[in-house]
Length: 241
Image (cartoon, one colour):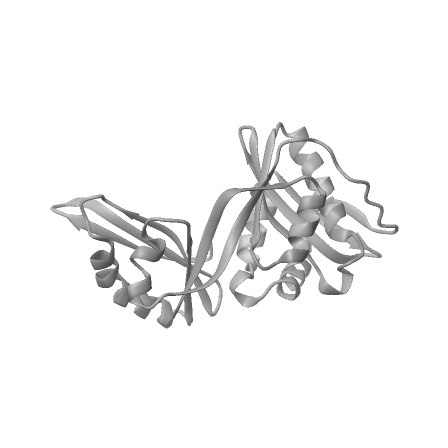
Protein backbone atom coordinates (compact mmCIF):
# COMPACT_ATOMS: atom_id res chain seq x y z
CA UNK A 1 0.00 0.00 0.00
CA UNK A 2 1.80 3.10 -1.26
CA UNK A 3 4.80 4.36 0.73
CA UNK A 4 5.34 2.33 3.88
CA UNK A 5 6.87 3.48 7.17
CA UNK A 6 7.63 0.52 9.42
CA UNK A 7 8.82 0.63 13.03
CA UNK A 8 9.96 -2.48 14.87
CA UNK A 9 10.46 -2.47 18.65
CA UNK A 10 13.02 -4.86 20.10
CA UNK A 11 13.47 -5.95 23.71
CA UNK A 12 16.68 -7.82 24.45
CA UNK A 13 16.99 -8.54 20.75
CA UNK A 14 13.46 -9.89 20.38
CA UNK A 15 10.65 -8.12 18.50
CA UNK A 16 7.86 -7.06 20.86
CA UNK A 17 6.09 -4.39 18.78
CA UNK A 18 5.45 -3.50 15.14
CA UNK A 19 3.83 -0.40 13.68
CA UNK A 20 3.24 0.05 9.95
CA UNK A 21 1.83 3.19 8.34
CA UNK A 22 1.51 3.95 4.65
CA UNK A 23 0.81 6.95 2.44
CA UNK A 24 -1.39 5.98 -0.47
CA UNK A 25 -2.61 9.44 -1.47
CA UNK A 26 -1.18 12.56 0.16
CA UNK A 27 -1.84 14.20 2.53
CA UNK A 28 -3.34 11.14 4.29
CA UNK A 29 -1.46 8.24 5.89
CA UNK A 30 -3.10 5.14 7.38
CA UNK A 31 -1.95 2.80 10.13
CA UNK A 32 -2.03 -0.60 8.43
CA UNK A 33 -0.60 -2.76 11.20
CA UNK A 34 -0.14 -2.42 14.95
CA UNK A 35 1.01 -5.48 16.88
CA UNK A 36 2.28 -5.59 20.45
CA UNK A 37 3.31 -8.23 22.94
CA UNK A 38 0.97 -8.68 25.90
CA UNK A 39 3.73 -7.74 28.31
CA UNK A 40 4.15 -4.22 26.85
CA UNK A 41 1.95 -1.26 27.81
CA UNK A 42 0.27 -0.04 24.64
CA UNK A 43 0.00 3.66 25.49
CA UNK A 44 3.62 3.91 26.62
CA UNK A 45 4.83 2.06 23.54
CA UNK A 46 2.85 4.26 21.16
CA UNK A 47 3.91 7.36 23.06
CA UNK A 48 7.55 6.51 22.28
CA UNK A 49 6.97 5.47 18.66
CA UNK A 50 4.55 8.19 17.61
CA UNK A 51 6.89 11.23 17.60
CA UNK A 52 9.31 9.48 15.25
CA UNK A 53 6.49 8.20 13.07
CA UNK A 54 4.95 11.67 12.82
CA UNK A 55 8.24 13.27 11.78
CA UNK A 56 8.82 10.69 9.09
CA UNK A 57 5.30 10.96 7.70
CA UNK A 58 5.37 14.76 7.68
CA UNK A 59 8.67 14.70 5.80
CA UNK A 60 6.96 12.57 3.17
CA UNK A 61 4.03 14.96 2.78
CA UNK A 62 1.41 13.47 5.12
CA UNK A 63 -0.66 15.81 7.27
CA UNK A 64 -3.16 13.35 8.73
CA UNK A 65 -2.70 9.89 10.24
CA UNK A 66 -5.80 7.69 10.31
CA UNK A 67 -6.29 4.51 12.29
CA UNK A 68 -9.22 2.12 12.02
CA UNK A 69 -9.87 -0.61 14.54
CA UNK A 70 -12.54 -2.28 16.60
CA UNK A 71 -10.66 -2.99 19.80
CA UNK A 72 -7.24 -3.31 21.37
CA UNK A 73 -4.86 -0.43 20.76
CA UNK A 74 -7.36 1.45 18.60
CA UNK A 75 -9.12 3.68 21.09
CA UNK A 76 -7.92 2.79 24.55
CA UNK A 77 -4.30 3.68 23.86
CA UNK A 78 -4.46 6.16 21.01
CA UNK A 79 -7.13 8.59 22.25
CA UNK A 80 -4.90 10.04 25.02
CA UNK A 81 -2.22 10.63 22.37
CA UNK A 82 -4.33 13.08 20.39
CA UNK A 83 -6.34 10.86 18.06
CA UNK A 84 -9.98 11.91 17.62
CA UNK A 85 -12.77 9.64 16.49
CA UNK A 86 -13.97 10.85 13.08
CA UNK A 87 -16.19 8.02 11.87
CA UNK A 88 -17.40 4.44 12.13
CA UNK A 89 -17.34 1.62 9.62
CA UNK A 90 -19.91 -1.18 9.75
CA UNK A 91 -19.91 -4.66 8.26
CA UNK A 92 -22.52 -6.48 6.19
CA UNK A 93 -22.63 -10.04 4.88
CA UNK A 94 -24.56 -12.09 2.35
CA UNK A 95 -24.98 -15.86 2.50
CA UNK A 96 -27.79 -16.50 0.02
CA UNK A 97 -27.65 -16.26 -3.76
CA UNK A 98 -30.74 -14.23 -4.41
CA UNK A 99 -30.38 -11.07 -6.49
CA UNK A 100 -32.89 -8.37 -7.36
CA UNK A 101 -33.40 -7.52 -11.03
CA UNK A 102 -31.20 -4.68 -12.31
CA UNK A 103 -31.53 -3.15 -15.75
CA UNK A 104 -29.36 -0.24 -16.83
CA UNK A 105 -29.75 0.25 -20.59
CA UNK A 106 -26.59 1.10 -22.46
CA UNK A 107 -24.20 0.30 -19.58
CA UNK A 108 -21.72 -2.53 -19.97
CA UNK A 109 -19.72 -4.24 -17.22
CA UNK A 110 -16.36 -5.77 -18.09
CA UNK A 111 -13.07 -6.65 -16.35
CA UNK A 112 -10.94 -3.57 -15.70
CA UNK A 113 -7.64 -3.42 -17.56
CA UNK A 114 -4.35 -1.69 -16.86
CA UNK A 115 -5.12 1.05 -19.38
CA UNK A 116 -8.25 1.92 -17.36
CA UNK A 117 -6.32 2.87 -14.20
CA UNK A 118 -6.10 6.60 -14.96
CA UNK A 119 -9.86 6.85 -15.47
CA UNK A 120 -10.57 4.67 -12.44
CA UNK A 121 -8.45 7.01 -10.32
CA UNK A 122 -10.56 9.96 -11.49
CA UNK A 123 -13.78 8.14 -10.61
CA UNK A 124 -12.37 7.23 -7.21
CA UNK A 125 -11.55 10.89 -6.49
CA UNK A 126 -15.06 11.96 -7.45
CA UNK A 127 -16.84 9.23 -5.49
CA UNK A 128 -15.02 9.51 -2.15
CA UNK A 129 -13.62 12.11 0.21
CA UNK A 130 -9.79 12.38 0.56
CA UNK A 131 -9.24 10.02 3.51
CA UNK A 132 -10.76 7.20 1.47
CA UNK A 133 -9.05 7.84 -1.88
CA UNK A 134 -6.97 5.08 -3.45
CA UNK A 135 -3.79 5.84 -5.37
CA UNK A 136 -2.78 4.62 -8.80
CA UNK A 137 -0.36 2.06 -7.34
CA UNK A 138 -3.09 0.54 -5.18
CA UNK A 139 -5.57 0.42 -8.05
CA UNK A 140 -2.92 -1.14 -10.28
CA UNK A 141 -2.25 -3.80 -7.64
CA UNK A 142 -5.99 -4.46 -7.40
CA UNK A 143 -6.22 -4.87 -11.15
CA UNK A 144 -3.39 -7.40 -11.07
CA UNK A 145 -4.32 -9.49 -8.06
CA UNK A 146 -8.02 -9.15 -7.18
CA UNK A 147 -10.32 -12.06 -7.78
CA UNK A 148 -12.86 -9.68 -9.28
CA UNK A 149 -12.16 -6.18 -10.60
CA UNK A 150 -14.96 -4.83 -12.77
CA UNK A 151 -15.62 -1.58 -14.61
CA UNK A 152 -18.98 -0.17 -15.71
CA UNK A 153 -18.91 1.98 -18.83
CA UNK A 154 -21.22 3.68 -21.29
CA UNK A 155 -20.05 4.95 -24.66
CA UNK A 156 -16.43 4.34 -23.60
CA UNK A 157 -16.82 6.47 -20.44
CA UNK A 158 -16.14 4.88 -17.07
CA UNK A 159 -19.11 5.21 -14.71
CA UNK A 160 -17.81 3.16 -11.79
CA UNK A 161 -15.87 0.12 -10.66
CA UNK A 162 -15.92 -2.66 -8.08
CA UNK A 163 -13.14 -4.75 -6.55
CA UNK A 164 -13.31 -7.95 -4.52
CA UNK A 165 -10.97 -10.63 -3.25
CA UNK A 166 -11.53 -14.15 -2.03
CA UNK A 167 -9.85 -16.48 0.46
CA UNK A 168 -11.05 -20.07 0.30
CA UNK A 169 -14.84 -19.76 0.45
CA UNK A 170 -15.10 -16.29 1.96
CA UNK A 171 -15.04 -13.20 -0.25
CA UNK A 172 -14.90 -9.51 0.55
CA UNK A 173 -15.99 -6.65 -1.68
CA UNK A 174 -13.39 -4.04 -0.88
CA UNK A 175 -14.55 -1.26 -3.18
CA UNK A 176 -17.67 -0.08 -4.98
CA UNK A 177 -17.35 3.37 -6.52
CA UNK A 178 -19.73 5.19 -8.86
CA UNK A 179 -19.11 8.56 -10.45
CA UNK A 180 -21.53 11.03 -8.76
CA UNK A 181 -22.78 12.06 -12.21
CA UNK A 182 -23.95 8.47 -12.77
CA UNK A 183 -25.38 7.77 -9.33
CA UNK A 184 -29.07 7.00 -8.96
CA UNK A 185 -29.21 5.16 -12.29
CA UNK A 186 -28.61 1.63 -11.03
CA UNK A 187 -24.90 1.48 -11.91
CA UNK A 188 -23.93 0.54 -8.36
CA UNK A 189 -26.47 -2.28 -8.33
CA UNK A 190 -25.25 -3.52 -11.69
CA UNK A 191 -21.65 -3.63 -10.47
CA UNK A 192 -22.66 -5.26 -7.19
CA UNK A 193 -24.67 -7.98 -8.89
CA UNK A 194 -21.94 -8.77 -11.40
CA UNK A 195 -19.33 -8.84 -8.62
CA UNK A 196 -21.39 -11.32 -6.62
CA UNK A 197 -21.79 -13.60 -9.64
CA UNK A 198 -18.06 -13.43 -10.25
CA UNK A 199 -17.31 -14.37 -6.64
CA UNK A 200 -19.81 -17.21 -6.63
CA UNK A 201 -18.22 -18.64 -9.78
CA UNK A 202 -14.88 -18.50 -7.96
CA UNK A 203 -16.29 -20.61 -5.11
CA UNK A 204 -17.34 -18.01 -2.54
CA UNK A 205 -20.09 -19.06 -0.15
CA UNK A 206 -20.04 -15.98 2.08
CA UNK A 207 -19.52 -12.39 0.91
CA UNK A 208 -18.81 -9.46 3.22
CA UNK A 209 -18.28 -5.74 2.73
CA UNK A 210 -17.88 -2.59 4.78
CA UNK A 211 -19.33 0.88 4.51
CA UNK A 212 -19.33 4.03 6.56
CA UNK A 213 -22.04 4.18 9.18
CA UNK A 214 -23.40 7.47 7.84
CA UNK A 215 -23.51 6.28 4.21
CA UNK A 216 -27.20 5.45 4.20
CA UNK A 217 -27.51 5.29 0.41
CA UNK A 218 -24.94 2.49 0.22
CA UNK A 219 -26.61 0.63 3.05
CA UNK A 220 -29.97 0.76 1.25
CA UNK A 221 -28.33 -0.75 -1.84
CA UNK A 222 -26.66 -3.54 0.11
CA UNK A 223 -29.81 -4.39 2.05
CA UNK A 224 -31.78 -4.55 -1.22
CA UNK A 225 -29.28 -7.14 -2.42
CA UNK A 226 -29.79 -9.31 0.65
CA UNK A 227 -26.85 -8.24 2.77
CA UNK A 228 -27.38 -8.24 6.53
CA UNK A 229 -25.64 -6.32 9.28
CA UNK A 230 -23.28 -8.33 11.44
CA UNK A 231 -21.26 -7.59 14.52
CA UNK A 232 -18.25 -5.94 12.93
CA UNK A 233 -17.93 -2.25 13.69
CA UNK A 234 -14.69 -0.29 13.60
CA UNK A 235 -13.99 3.24 14.75
CA UNK A 236 -11.97 5.59 12.56
CA UNK A 237 -9.49 7.80 14.43
CA UNK A 238 -7.63 10.81 13.03
CA UNK A 239 -4.47 12.53 14.22
CA UNK A 240 -3.36 15.82 12.67
CA UNK A 241 0.38 15.72 12.12
